[in-house]
View 1 (cartoon, helix red, strand yellow):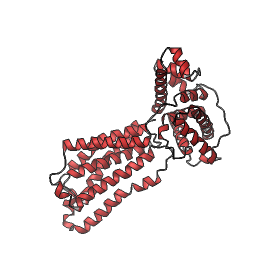
View 2 (tube, rainbow over the protein chains, first blue to last red):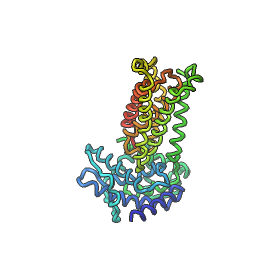
View 3 (cartoon, each protein chain N blue to C red):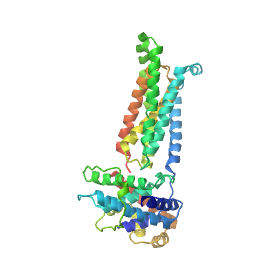
View 4 (tube, each protein chain N blue to C red):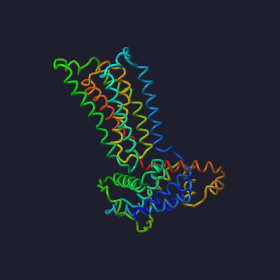
Length: 178
Length: 212
């Protein structure tokens, strides 16, 4: 199970870094399920919403994907980031938490689905400069393509890509600073 | 925003590129070395008798210590800034430089009569040593802390401290070319103090600035 997951995720991330968007979407969905399982298992008392940890982890994975070496295993990398973000989430809420290191093997996901509630990310999104916020919202919440977003705001696709990239980086940074 | 929506946004940004961490570390270290050499050259510069000194074991041994320290710290900091990377082996290698210094100190104690131990240890310019190693190392340290932000260290304080050791090893390598106190007794004492100053600054920087 571990070996198969590892090989598959590694292949997808490699393809994604080479520019394959479909592979990247696939990688992100599978990773989200793994991290969701991990976060739900670790958060036994309330106070931290597992889905916030999932989102912060995905953002961190995205902006830090240059730290993965394609000859290194991908699961330890994913879980190290997830654990860091989980501890961060507890720390922000003024709690201390001990997390065992060697639990990777048992955190294999049943396909778990997200719960819907008010998200930390919305608050951060609201604090972005208007241009970045509207582009990030259009591509994510409204589900528009880069081309559709460019048409909607009357700007070039390149400008959309730049705003999107900067917006996502700013959200990730904001989470790191808090 | 649902996670599903977030994934759409991340996916649309799939084509954005960043320099792989390993290449970035090499480049940052090269830039840090240039900064160190410029500061060194325009402040103290090499000692005047360096051509003669180069033929002595004691003078050359200083570079062995400092270069080994910088090299081992470089390997460790790369592992520390990569999530999930194993750090055990690189951390164990950090013992190499202190062990070499220890061996040199023991040899020196045998080679030099006891009456001279004190003067060898105190040397002639320990204040310069403790001032200039941090001064040469502070620019490189800033670059290494910035690199830690570019990476993803899951133990920022430890990574910051190792950034200080790397900056210290680099700075001490240049400072060693200036310093006329070549005794391992001097090096083991004052270089260590100077490098610890940078290490403490690095740990503090890791605590305050290395967020991601």
